[in-house]
Image 1 (cartoon, one colour):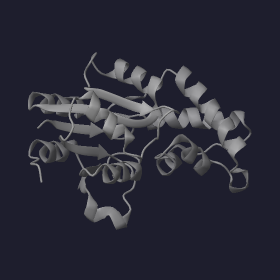
Image 2 (image 1 turned 30 degrees about the vertical axis):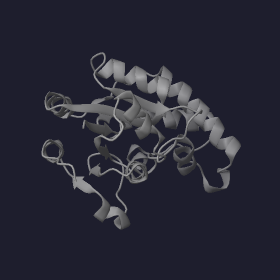
Image 3 (image 1 turned 90 degrees about the horizontal axis):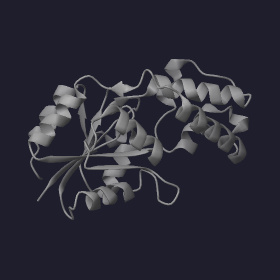
Length: 220
């Protein structure tokens, strides 16, 4: 039976928040909406893109057409940006290497668009580094649906693996629950764990703690 560690991308293995915030503010400005201070974005991100945009808009402007306008502008701006501040968190690459050496398959499951996710993974990690990379496509459900986990199982040629989900947001927690697998919640990202779910997850403060949890993991 194989072992798979499934990682969220933004805020979990890669620090993207500064470049994401800059692109969102430009998209908001283009559409005539107020920009937000950088520190506000920790409370905005998490979940699918429509949900994220809705959190940023003035309450009386939360309508589908307005969300779409900002969403499409953001996608264009972010895709074209240099993303100079985006990089893996310190210690993440070393952790992934240890997992691979200990027989784990490693995967990414994100609500970031598939093409953009593939481009970022290719830029930040060696070719073929992950066994599966599953992002968002309009043709399939986004997180917290378990669809992405099932696709990862198929990519990894595993039908009933020992799997664990690692993320920094409630969409990650709910994805793990929907997939019926354990979840590790990392506290260095942008998400906040809801109190009602604290007994359902393992919380870690540092990458060293995450390493200990994963390398010592035994199938329950």
